[in-house]
Length: 311
Ligand SMILES: [Zn+2]
Image (cartoon, rainbow, N blue to C red; front, side, top):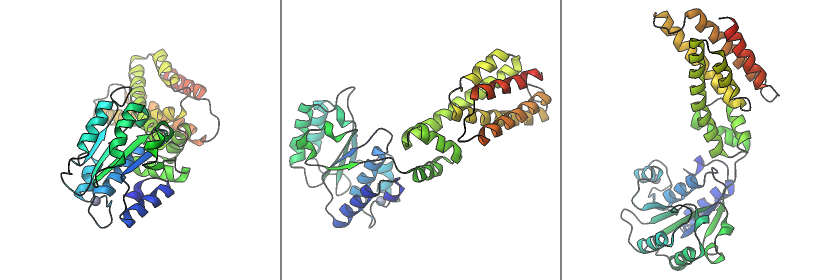
């Protein structure tokens, strides 16, 4: 399970040594920027703490599966209530910490956004951190460990999550999403190597692309050139989005062509075929220019002109 975490070789090595030695720390701080995989790592640590397989965290037993799906009764996640991690929440955590695990040998509490824990709350937490019950493991997630009191930090093992190198990041996203490498590279460039943000870009792009492709289709049907222009120009500064949009437009045209063949099409077969050819040509033009400057504005307005001039 540890191997599925992208990059961060040193973290993986130290976690392996904790597991192997049987001296699993009572408290971790996982620091890193949003989208860097901190929660994923926290779940792997939690699974390592509660999985009872020989090669824990095995990632394939019932326990690991429950941890992954946030369904294990001994692995609880706490988060701030709005802008602050309230002292009441911390007191609840503290009181629950002395209750025995329900299922297994250990209990894990994952605390999100600990940067939002103020000093009184941290001091309240310190009481249980100083003498934690034998079965208890705390995982504190934050952007920067410096936001926590020295007294808290000194009782935790701090793991700093970093963005993996490009090849590893591409491989990870490709396995997860099956997206084309060129799209993944572009998303990673826009997210500065942050995998979580790159995934957001890739999925957000998909939704936007579908909406835009449908809008073009509607514009063609209504012969509304202006609205088609507006739609394509929304991608003026978003080449990745534009490529995704062209892909969606092509798919939509293909589907429409099938409908036309059955006599169910909303626009004529000749219009659909031309739209399909134009979408394919434009898509190829954009893909050929990977890594080179290309004006999306010119490319997209030329595309709309070609579609509407022929109608
Ligand atoms: Zn397991």
